[in-house]
Image (cartoon, rainbow, N blue to C red; front, side, top):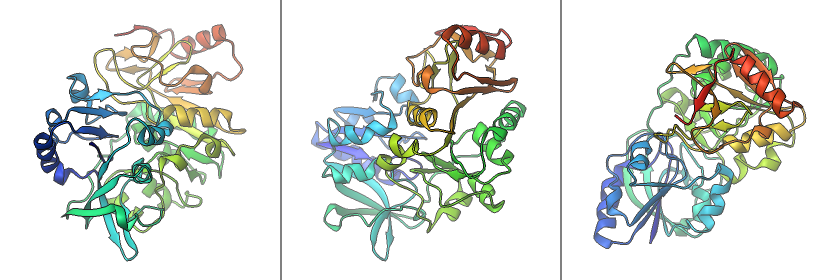
Length: 376
């Protein structure tokens, strides 16, 4: 059979050892994983006939590099089709919360409802500590079997204090975002700095909600109810999210038609950018650092939204090496034509309407001539 394990910071780690033992005993079991933000020592990948993911970092980086887990490149909006197609699971092992109306997902919804809609039985780990932030209906009674309970809260993504470069980048991005517009960002120093820098209300419409949204709400700068599929933070974020209908399936959060219907400001980062404006978010030539994720979905939606902007924000250097390269170390994650504006701590490059030679020249000037050969 094929077994999928719910992802995000609320993944059902308390039963990973039992799942691995059962797979080893049965033999021939396939394992499907999503976004695993921290390594799970209880999962024995060698107990499975095959293990696959669409997001190799952060927690699966070493397993992917070692060849124990295969990374299938897929944008986030395409994952539900995978779940209904070649990756259709027979069983979904997932963390749920109990409410008066039944069972719901807690700190992430992601592709898990797609698995249920594709017919998967849910082996549910009931959490007494996860927030109830699922905006959807109760899970179907006939597809849920409770296998365990846990008092462990979702894992914590420690908030990193943005350094001077990220603060400078945020100060350049903030004036570009219109009051009342929709804003997408993920958990990163750029996002933390930008949410602190904003002075106008925004509607959050993102794949993930980071910890800094709590501070934004306390400042009265969140318009409407945020939309996301994952929570990525700590106790403050989980307490704030509990009881709020925030989390939706990927089919909704990453739908390009919905996202591009009115102005969207998408703020994403990168591992590196080439002189044509193409973006790599997967990793270096030596290691998988992240995954494609929703980067190309939000970039494309923002670029085609009238009045919005697809923004890529990255410091000029990382570990002393320029982030602008002549040739990417990995395949293109987001094409250049879905990038409107690139921001580093030195300034802003508006690439809209520029020819390829003009883009090349503009980016090289923005990096003050510091261009790495790439593929390193």
